[in-house]
Image 1: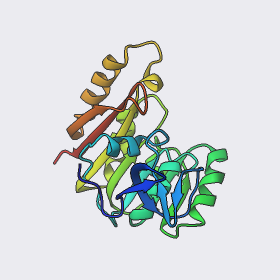
Image 2: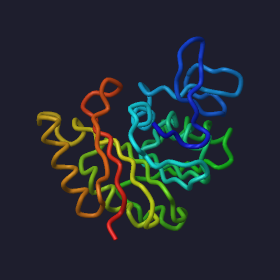
Image 3: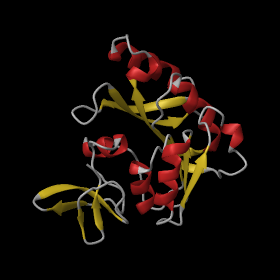
Image 4: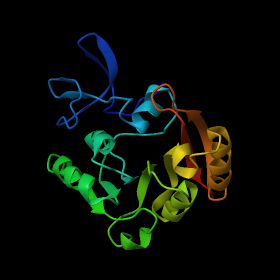
Length: 209
């Protein structure tokens, strides 16, 4: 597995895990400046732990859709460049602001990822879009935000089957979402995120030319 610069494997009291160097945010294990990136708390962490080829590198510009309270985006900002964190709900955004206090490269945006026109004047072109949104129409969200992604960039999405249709078979939901994604992206890799996250599919894609 190739890990990004700044995301090594590190030992935490006998448990080896991926880690980043930064201020702890959610009760994760720490060792000096290193903090454990818990794949059970992070879909992107699970993608890395499962060995998916995310293409992540240190210092990249990132647009994070569905940042919530900042668990995963805090790790992304630890090793990345400018990181724009979009979150729709006011309550987790307050926690996200606290996370940003310890990271000068993290920019929280209280916005709806389904309406990128509301933050288009703020977000510069990025190398990576990380998407972790709990809403119907997840492929559409990715398509709408394609405008921010450089041609050689990557979409790293965690598709939540239950957010699309709580009654449908997750495999069918994944097939439908991936098929829709392929209208605007070339899908490079997919993998279900169990045992870390049930009924979630990790997707690595790049924009169609």
